[in-house]
Length: 347
Image 1 (spheres, rainbow, N blue to C red):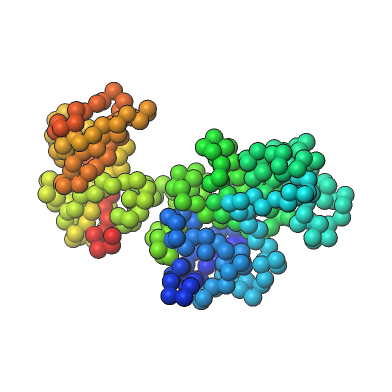
Image 2 (spheres, rainbow, N blue to C red; image 1 turned 45 degrees about the vertical axis):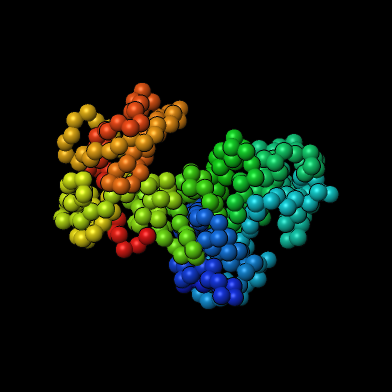
């Protein structure tokens, strides 16, 4: 297994800074997601790790040793792309075994390794087929098998599931995660889908405009976002300005208790509670605020209630049998254990 370290990594195109002072440490056998919107620098970062792009400055280290002078073909970091890039004139088995052939592995050993890998990706018996005889999901499994069969130090996945439909994406997520854990391979994957990142990754690196905003376990992005931009990316627009004084926050709608936010300095803050943690109650009490209902949308498992709170629209995931009337006023309870505070000096 291999550790991957990105140290003060920068990439500049002409006058555009694609990646800015990126520091990241991927532990041996860990799967990390590079998450963010289009143009945030995540794919550029992955291509630098693979050796397909040279950084403008900084270092990339495998097991503590710089690989900047190691060419891509000798870096032992294999990349699976968004497009399958299979050889149409070769069979499935020949596609999977291509890297082994280039490494001089004997025919019999190649055959053994390829058959074992096809079994792992649930394609036993497909070895003689051509890529055009496969579904998109099967083609992606062939591409994954081709990457894994050479036993690389690092597996790199560049939005490999974006071309698949919802059901196939879910199936492939499970397969990729199970293979990564079984083989204990260090893996980095790029995605713009926060649900995919949470499902697959041990830790998530959220990037925006070339900068790393937060590198954390998936749960922390929901429960403990560092800044408002992180909360918004994870679909939490529930923000209320206030002034923190000890364990309380004074807001325009009253005092909010936030005992768990001990690491946040006193002063101006943003109060946030995720939509699924906000309660709608009948009587006002501690940590309650009033809100005007603007819209209610049935979502199957819950009703999405949009309500005006302190001049901003909040979202509340209400039980399906609770249907507030648009235009009515409701009381929202913000449970102390789920109130989180963020600084206001960063957007």
